Amino acid sequence: MRMRTTSSLLALLLVGSAFRSTEAQDPRLSNRLDAPTRKALSAIVDSARAQGIPVEPLMEKVYQGLAMGADGSRIVVAVRSLTFEMGNAHRVLGAVATTDELKAAASAVHAGVPAVELGKMKKQSGLRRSLTLPFTVLADIVSRGVPVSAATNAIKSLVGAGAKDKDISDFQRNVSVDIEKGAQPAAAAETRAKGAVVPAAKADNREHE
Amino acid sequence: MPDWGRTTLELMVQELQHPIRLDESFDRRVMVRVRRAHAERRHRGIIGWLGAATNISRRPAWAAALAACVVAVISVGIFRKTPPQVPSGQAIPVQFVLVAPDAHSVTVVGDFNNWGLNDTALVAENHNGVWSVSAPVHTGVHRYAFLVNGKQWVADPTAPRAADDDFGQPSSALVVEASTQ
Image 1 (cartoon, each protein chain N blue to C red):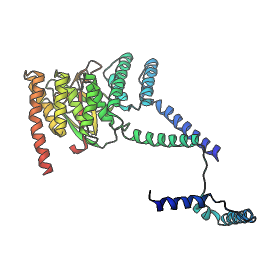
Image 2 (cartoon, one colour):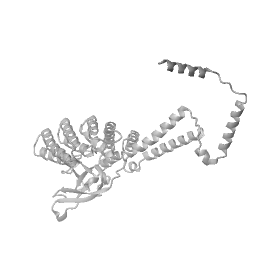
Image 3 (cartoon, rainbow over the protein chains, first blue to last red):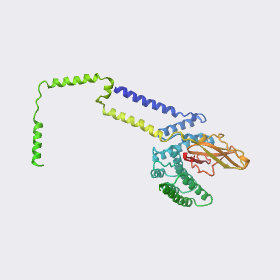
């Protein structure tokens, strides 16, 4: 009886690992890439999978590189960088983060936002609030020249005040227009965040009444 | 403790210390009862066996290993389910617009069409330079860009920038929420 139970468990584990190994040989990697690039990417993808990082965004990065005419080594560097950034995001956001949140968070990390700040935002907002859009907007305004601390504070204040995704989209649009018109990026973000927080908080209060 | 309590306790201890004499047939009678109970259980069949109480003996190490396996299997199920590996949301029509009066062709290329260069072409109705297309996009976050005249990459001026322009070309970010329907 004892032997039979042990054998069943071992068989279960072996079947599981064999499936994962087959899964690692993604056919989409083999069609349009040379052998060294394919080998390097397969290793990165397998490593990401082993860390629990979703691999679909990595595949999308490969496709983007191919579409934009990048050579194999550049694609490998980009995918490795994305894996590192998603790994950082995964560590601070935890297993509750969705693939989209991780992808958006990796973009913010790439822009220069410390991953730990993203983790704080996730804790502040709770499990139900998706931070995909806030992280996307954070990456956007940093790439437009808003200093990381000012951008992080602005998004934190919006999320903390219960701003909806639409409010945060409006905030992004307003900040980008202000910057295009010549405003100092930090001032634009701080001013627009103040304007967005008050209506968001009022709307939230009305919903509770 | 009051005296009455102490006295009672002493009496109980004395009684418990007093040896009990068993008669000589005691062992034999116990064994007869045990064999009878065992025989009755064997005759109750599978239903009786399922309902009967049974002692299960396992080594602690095996019990710990079994528990670890159960936790691992459940955890893998939970953690793999939480961050879905593929976009599993429904496709929602999204309109892409680019103003490009001098363009001969415009396509939109991104995560949602696996960066297929010619998969989603924009159309300039009335030839007024406003190119647009409505394409189904799964819920989630996507990177994309416009390809003008088959060679020039252009980010969407109305969308957030994708910060990770690893290939030296601009791109944009699109977040499609289920609630935008």
